[in-house]
Each structure stands twice: as structure tokens, then as C-alpha cells.
Length: 316
Image (cartoon, rainbow, N blue to C red; front, side):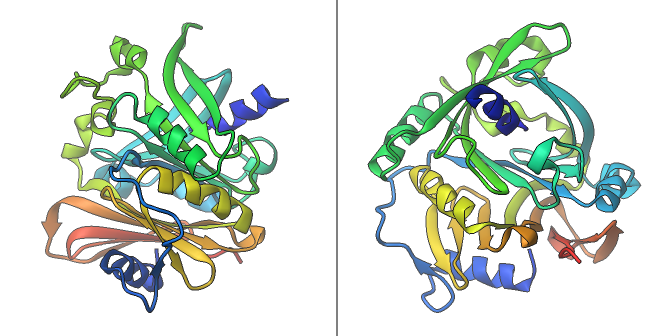
């Protein structure tokens, strides 16, 4: 969701990944070490919602026209208007999580460049975003940057969509992370096609996303690896810590955030090496075979078992 563009208007995975995640979950000290300088909150408040990335045009076009992806996942090519901006994304949606892809040149300014990416982590209970904001202040972020995003369903009427918080507003080189909380007004609008709440104050991801994932193989995003510039990494980690992720350092100045069903690995790289590297996916059912699908300059490997791994080629 391209709320970062609206903010600007307002203010003017490889084998290494698999091993790193396994070690991080186990708390191993040789390949990953816990950052003990920051206390971990008692309760998980933020969970992986979605990530987006700008990929090369060949890959974006292949994703858009892939018959296999339409069978594999709840795929949607959607144009959205929100906060006075309009964007078209390629979406793969699961039960609680999703992935959004753009082509080089789809977006304005520096955000049109290959490797631009972002991460949305969201609350499950109304009011938790306010707690995240207070936790950010306790972690030394004196002025977390709030913003309310709206959506226009095509009639020119802006519907409150979700509130966001950032550590630095729109100050990023290639990677934009934010925390978000869906709003009651959006769920109440019948055009949102969302589900009734499961408990008082339910603003969760499963309620927001449709159940069409049941008709496909893909269930959810369970791991994501993105290469990001060092400044962007430093701005992201306090947000993840405030949300209750266990953040652990990796060799090479990267980090992995573990908890809540999806592991997030961020590699520290120069800007020209930034971008989406790998996505791990769970399936609705195990498969006995191994299927490899080449999609532009990326490879999706499905099975065997109830998992898939989507790897994106490094820039040439």
C-alpha cells in the first residue's frame, strides 16, 4: 500500500536465509545473537501484514500474466485510490498475510527504482497501535510520526482505512516500514467486503482479507527476506521491537525479527543491491511433488510438503 507517497505530500529467501531463520528461532549464538540491549515487550502487538517491492519489468509482467500464479494463490491485479493517490499492484493474498509487487517505473520519483520496498506490520486488537507508540518513545524514538490513511471506493468519498505510525516519517533511502491499525469505519463499510469481528475490538488481518485463499494452494507468508540500506534498517528495528518481535543480529550487519508466524530478515546492503530476495510460503495442504516455476527473473519452488519458496534473482 503506497501510503508513503501520501506522507510525502503531507510533509511538503536462499539457503542462507533458511539457516539464519532456523538459528534465530532456536536462539543460536553462532549465526545469530539476540540484541539484549533492548528489553523485549511482554506481548506481541504487531504482526507481519504485507510487504511490497519494486521488481524488474520482466518479472512484474510475468507475475501479472502467470496462469500458474492464478491457480497457486488468490491473485489480484488491483488499482486502489487512497489518500489522494492511485496505484496498481499485483497481489498474492493469503489467510492473514499478503505480498504486493510493482514494476520499475510504476511509481513516481525514487520509489520507481528497482529494489524499493516496504513493510507493513499491523495490530490485531483496537488500541494496540497507541501502545506501540508509547513503546517507541521508551525505545528512544521521541517523535513517532502518525498518519491516517483513507480509501476512495470510486465515488469520491474518503473512508477512514487505517492509522499508521513510523519512526521517521518519509525519511528513507529504499525501504519504508510502518505499523498500522485498521479502523472500525472501514470494517463497517459494506464495500470493504470484510468479515464480522471475532471478538470485541477485532481489527485483525484475517478479518480484513477475503477467504478466497481456500480455493488455492498458497495459505500465508511465513518468511520474507529483503535487502535494505543501513539507514533504513536502523529505522526499522525499533518499530519491530516495539511491536514485540524478537530482533536478533546476523553477520554482515543484518537482522532477523521472529515471532507471530512470519520471520522477517533484513540484510544491510548498499542502495544498488536493495530489494526483495526471497519469500517463504505455507500451503493449505501438503503436496507430494516438487514443482519449479520460472517467473521472469524469479523462481517459485512448490513442495514437497506444505511449503513453497520464491527466490528473486540479484540485480545484474
